[in-house]
Image (tube, rainbow, N blue to C red; front, side):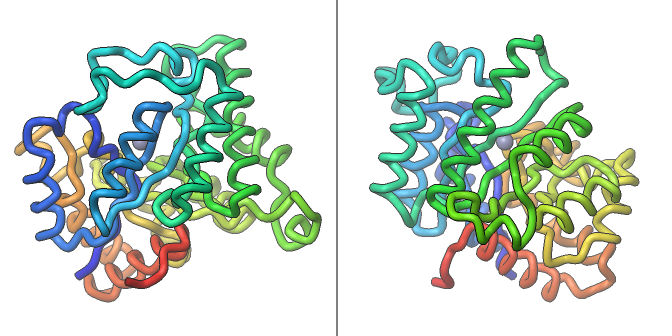
Length: 297
Ligand SMILES: [Zn+2]
């Protein structure tokens, strides 16, 4: 069984003590594809570093909506291993997004998308910060159009705002793809936690994939499971958001999520879709490859 983790942060300090063992465990559990997701300059470079070191790893470059404000003053406590003396190359967002462009030109096969980006009204927010999140989101969309690579979208407590934003910024459908410079933007709604209606808009109107992970296994996530049932499996991909969001079945064992827990998520999706685990895993794995345009290998 091959499984893809389309959203993980293995460079986080919580993996410093045993990162290589975790990678081995993941491999043993069938994880044949991991996409390391950047959240600011340093973590994007760290994600790329990991991707270059491991054949089955890829990465995205991006600025998390909750990291927009402190992007150029990262917390020294959370620097990835080996980055203690790293000097930021960018002092502002213009410089940072030029750096992202340069890196993507240099590593077109390892950098498979942009983000995570999006709108977060759950954590501390102000009108100014929300404005900044939208500006940064737009920059990711431009990169996505320029390089024809997907965006990884984070949304929290921002359903209404997300729908408004997307309907203004992204021209859905075939019509838009005919306008030069306004090509279809592909992407994934990372950590899908909403309901069927939201799932329908994201998949049918925008053609986005839904990232399904630990959240779907939680007892109170009935609506998420209903959405999985009614969404065509072609739009689903598996993800952990490791080290966060441990699936229900592993919660007693640890507070740190890792890709090797993903079989639990595959089992859940297979049950909801009433297909075998093997068939389910195969479809989900191919979906992940399609989303990030990763050739078979
Ligand atoms: Zn994440």
